Image: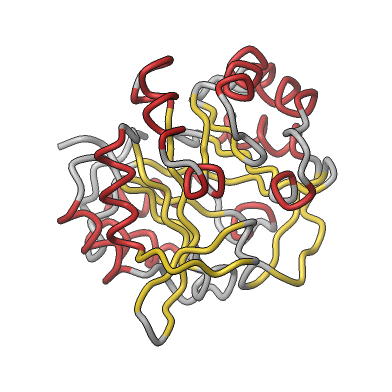
Length: 251
């Protein structure tokens, strides 16, 4: 069985790491370069950097911040936010990213997924999906959770996989920042539906939530932000706990 992954996420706005609740009420969480280096040293399996206002503001990802983080870490590095073309992907890979995460751009132009996979390999393309439960079921959102679409979470995830996505990064907007656990039922359904890895995001508040994402949600990786940024959970301690719980994890 493949080892499960622990992935800290740097949500960056105007060059600073931030964290909110349900995608709003953001507060400062520190310097992204310092945090990235810290998590690499602590034993994180990967690092995700999301420029959360790039798409909404209609600008490119901050390349210099990406370069600074990449220079100080020794783990796989995924960058997202404001990536809408092959040129953007090339720029991020040149800055030190190993993968790119696309979200709104993929919904608006789904062929971008296959373009990235064909040009750089399937493993480079992570499709991020922000979704929340509505009266119509799980619906996907654009522009950092600001715009609701009519896309069903599971149908869009399946389409993204078939188009060449290497991984799905699913964030439950309902669970984001509230520390009540991941959306394990939806995660489990994605796991059954897709032949590619699924990364759980949104809801981590204690170590048991990571365990449940792996055991109940069958997630391949668990991503978290605030619990790491504000020192509520240490990555080494988390891995020791998960190992004791019988979850395959890189120590």
